[in-house]
Length: 299
Length: 250
Ligand SMILES: Nc1ncnc2c1ncn2[C@@H]1O[C@H](COP(=O)(O)OP(=O)(O)OP(=O)(O)O)[C@@H](O)[C@H]1O
Ligand SMILES: [Mg+2]
Image 1 (tube, protein in one colour):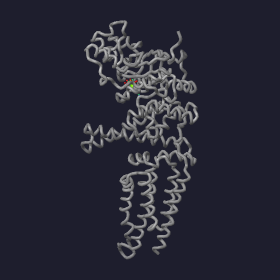
Image 2 (image 1 turned 90 degrees about the horizontal axis):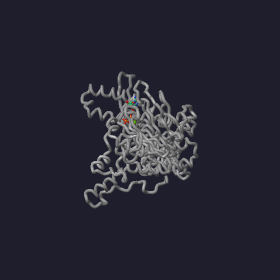
Image 3 (image 1 turned 135 degrees about the horizontal axis):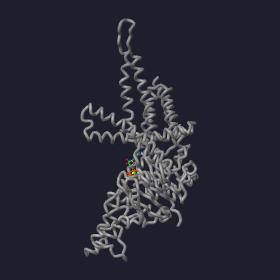
Image 4 (image 1 turned 180 degrees about the vertical axis):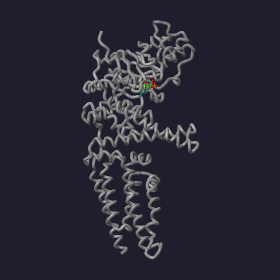
């Protein structure tokens, strides 16, 4: 068996001042995964993600890249951060330049790209997140959701091998969420490994193929989404509710059938419900087509 | 402050090279200072206001509000220029002719000069000026620091405003003593958050490969000779017109 792309072993971390945020945490991230780090507020999600690109150094335990213990010297950190892109929870912590375009160009220029190449990356990332119309706007005069997209574009423009996002959907409207998930899906299809944190069980259920459930600074359980989120015991201990879609399908007695997998998307469950209730499916009930079904520049 | 910033970023001349705006503005400023004010200043004032409102499309009320505060100070100072106090024979206070003249010309001059500055700050974002500092030899470390400060000012102004609103919502400003205490807390809290913010900003920058230099794509400013020439032309025109007028008066 090959070593996981990125792994945490016995990770412990205490903030200066004494709060212990991580207590012996183990986590595996394999190539091509969409991993959701799921946990309630204050369970240590952000702290873990900061370890995944070397922004925090563990008090004990280690991070492994391709099976090798990570090193924290200047050069190793640079290499590491080229491979692992991190989008912070709060966009104001990330946007620093005067205009959107300039801010997004920061990462590509740091990769050593020429100005022309960087400009191309900027355009590509802004198009992917549908914020080209903001290119010339000052970063301080944007709405929260706009800032969030620009912050994501800034990391996307570096084309990292692993993209780590801290609560990427928080603060986005439903359309924005659908669109962002579509963008991430495209990245995934282009070979990017994705890790994101959330406390939204339904989001993790519908979108991730792997889930790591957090509880008080440690991973309580990691595995396939359906298996982990179907485990009442784990959810109860982590103070999380079972996903709504799972509850609905279970209540209807669907998904028991091993031949037919439990539907995980809203549309699929609604469709099943309609069948059950004997109503014809109506287009008015349907959500707009998810963005990943359209062709984007990242394909 | 926010209104100025907004128009600086959105006016029609925003994409012009800063030098194209600096040239006519400083030219007019020099004219105001060296030529007789009575004929020059109104022309300069008209030129600057027209350029700002007609040219760059900044609304007149915004321009007036920018000019209002310094004008108020000017007006308040006028009596002191117009009145002369004589202590040689006891106490003698009078409105002197010279004093009036001085007050009027000073006022006109100052107003014209301010309109040139208002034109500059309303048509060009502060960051354009800051980046230009690099071209005149200010070390890039210093320029980056100023740019970051500019960016963070907005974060903190926003935090301060929302913090104040939140305190008000919880009756933190319902009485003067409470208000003083609330403001103290707000200031202390902002300071701590500033430190935490700096730390997180560093994490965010490091994550994007920051190695000590904040390099970004330069704004696409191309110096247009036509616009430079037009700017010079305007200055020449105002200068000539003022000279003619002055001769006509005398
Ligand atoms: N800068 C800090 N200094 C000291 N303690 C901190 C700091 N940041 C977080 N903590 C503490 O570490 C623990 C884990 O916090 P963390 O931010 O990782 O949680 P989280 O799972 O991301 O929460 P949320 O869902 O609210 O973002 C919490 O108990 C928190 O109080
Ligand atoms: Mg967090």
